[in-house]
Image (cartoon, rainbow, N blue to C red; front, side, top):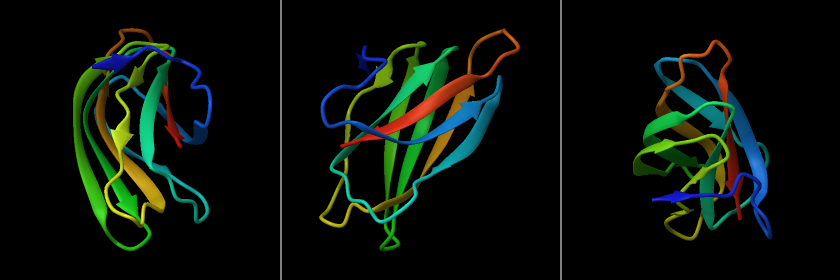
Length: 114
């Protein structure tokens, strides 16, 4: 399921971003400061990205593994991912993905939370 909203509205706040290259890779988006959120989503810009896995790490040492397994086109976002537990203070989000264009420029993945 893909949400078509390139610019999240309402309470959504961008908490990180990463440029991703044309290959299967793993990257991390570091989230600054002690802030708690209830849900996240990843939005893609410039080129399509196929996500395989998203792992959310919390300040208390816990983590949440989320299977995304979806190709997200530019201007679209993943489904909304509800965060588990009461202590949802995110430190970083690890991504396993493949940037799927044949162009030289990279895609940008932006992490939004509310």
